[in-house]
Image: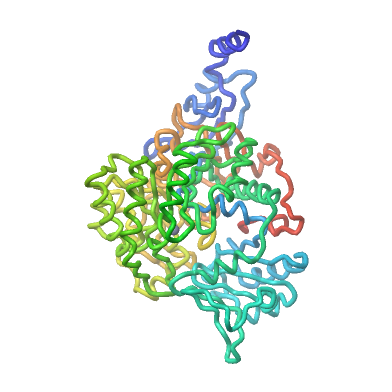
Length: 583
Ligand SMILES: [Zn+2]
């Protein structure tokens, strides 16, 4: 009874008053191009209203309202990365030295040396993706000799895109690799005396690289939770408020989901995370999905404070091992096994029957054609009937395939992988004459498109680099990859990163715009995205990130409002000394 009375009292007196108002800003509602408001009021994690500062104060301000003066800065809906491996990265972030954003190879090597000096006996120094040679002034990769000279006494492991990894001499010794070390589909390079050179190459598969990575140490369960918290904080610092997690190789459900789950249950997960489940055992994929269908269900949310805060979405990005067309542009395209269709069909039937949304990794049009054949066959006697599904990547999807995707009600999650691989792609296939992936065509056809990074093993998670790509069609090294007339306008590019990605977790009516009733997820930006040059946009960061109506990150003049976070552990963590992205 008492609770009921309190509820009634709240609903009559305080319901329409805001708990947080951001005012005096340039607030892009993203409801339509060019619509900006001065102030925004929120309450209980939802947006109450936008309008002029005066009108919002008049209607929604009470003594208890927290006020944030945006001081003319631009405010946008929180960014949503629809293809990130965030849950897995949380398990590893604190162990990794990130070269993301490093401008010279010289500095990258100094960081490696500094980190090695503080790394204790038995631990590895690791750089796992997020860089390439074109970001460096020197325009080259380190050599294995340079790495050996820089770090002779601690094991070092560095991955380069999906195609190559460097292991220093000490690392080869610790691993015990020799001329007999064999990973099918990969190359452990040997010198003329039959000794491993320290270079590992992916050929048909990246097995040598990722099996080796798995041998380079793990964080403890306590460290994994702390590491996840730091990774989510890191992406909050760029204005990310949501991710649609694409799962990944060796990311087992539900063991490897526990660190993010612990944060969600403690109310400390600061990025709304929607996750898909990726079958791990070749040949037993159907059994994995059957098991998981009995264990969990779409939209199951485990966040104690937020709607859709940590929610299971469905199946993918890999559904079957034989469907993985490996995107290594150092090597020719992989032709999928003739078993692919027979493996895929029962899994799709199972998912459609149980109304589980799914996503499917596919880089090349040649793979997509065959997958669509399977979907169309299933759809004939088991209609998809509005079930949410989408392809991930789709760099070389054809016009005819887009028509078929549209007919089946599908969408596409695109990423800026070509920002990192454009030079290699061009070397292999020549410069594309149209946009790749063909985002403008997808949009013109009314296909839902989400934007993402596929971070962090190839590309960085910094969304502003990805927006730079959408706005210029250039690579990280500045090469014009698509023709200039194919670039997106600013509103469309940002819309892909907000409403577009929200579709990938079925939340397009809940987030992506700053309008009444949507989630109070937003960012005060360091620079005005709408007037800045693409070069300036690359350097954008968040001054304040709000998720569910709460400040989860703040910097610059708002820094005192940033919630505290525990120091990274272990104490030698590169994150403690360098952070992540080098701003
Ligand atoms: Zn993928």
